[in-house]
Length: 317
Image (cartoon, rainbow, N blue to C red; front, side, top):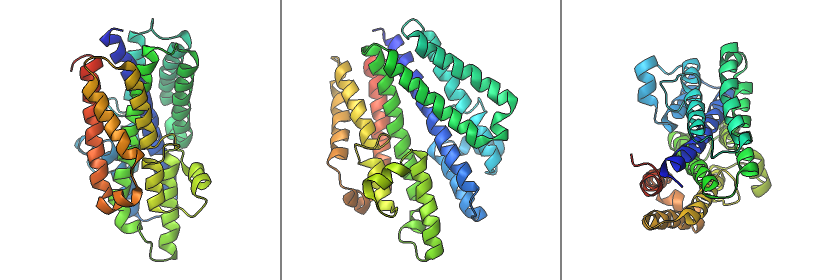
């Protein structure tokens, strides 16, 4: 396969996954903002959302003060923001168009229709009228894109590069979500002091779980009250949780092993080592040594993996 073709397939999937992740985080922040809470607590949530995507400075340069409505518009409709939903879905569609002949008709039509429908919805004011419904639509289109890809594409290198992009993006995003939410608020939430704290504690961790479709999974796995330690374990170490860091890295390694070439030995070794640390990790040790330090190092290594994949398989940047 040409490296240019692989590059387009890889980034098409990364952008689609990024759009979904952005919609998930915005939806949870929007739903949480409807609950009774102080202005300071609400502000922390919106600032955290910008921090997850490393967009705090970019937002402040345009809008200044963090205002929920402006943050949502910046993360949905602003084409100058590379991580906004419109930018991601545009990038996914443009990459798909560049390799139209490699994709099945169903995959291309799904990507193209998503882009056309997004523009129609934004012009019609669907986002302003019902943000929650709009975010559900973005998530649905991502699910549809992923399902059509797996259901209609030949299981060859093309599909492997698409899967690789999806799960590397997912590993990165889940780690960012856990890091920002825990680091910013863990002093307030580890060991709630009174009934009011415990009530907010429940809603806070429930929101984090819902942002990765993990609330029902948590109940099924632990069958107990929601605790920060178990939330961290579920989202980082559980290989049977579809959006966990561990599950994502399992997919990254398995696809890399199939795509292996003479240049990729070191990249695959680093990916396997990172996966092994998650496979044999224990949450108590991670928390004792510092969750923020662990996740910061993980994000650096995922970024390094992305650079290695680009160097070994894709267009040199």
